Length: 110
Image (cartoon, rainbow, N blue to C red; front, side, top):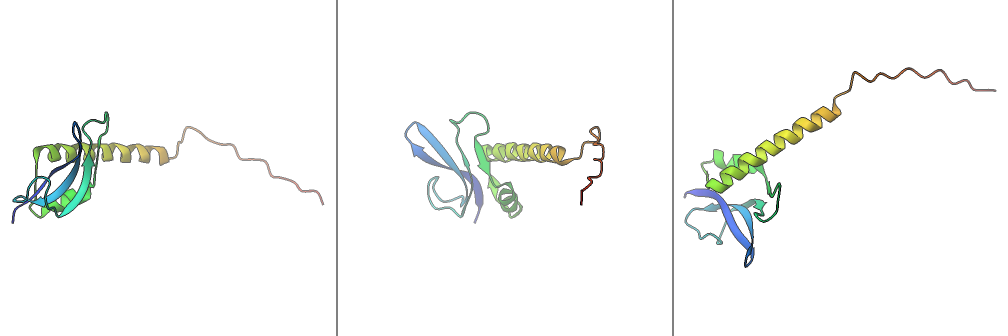
């Protein structure tokens, strides 16, 4: 059984929307599949896909062959995840240029 990672067309006429699926290569384009691992909307501008990259890597390690379009989607999602991770680490790093002065002790009257 040869497994492929490919697009499954959904949506209305002239308004395509695709699901990224893992399927037996012998099954039809919109037929039976093993697992849905993402979505792709070619009409949407900007970042137009969501993909579980870990599951895609798992299936590729098991011998699944991604289609050309899915291969490019995996590459884009990996790149986007790496930049998001780098920016989140930059936000959480303490800034050494801003130093706060200690507050004076508060006196309580009794």
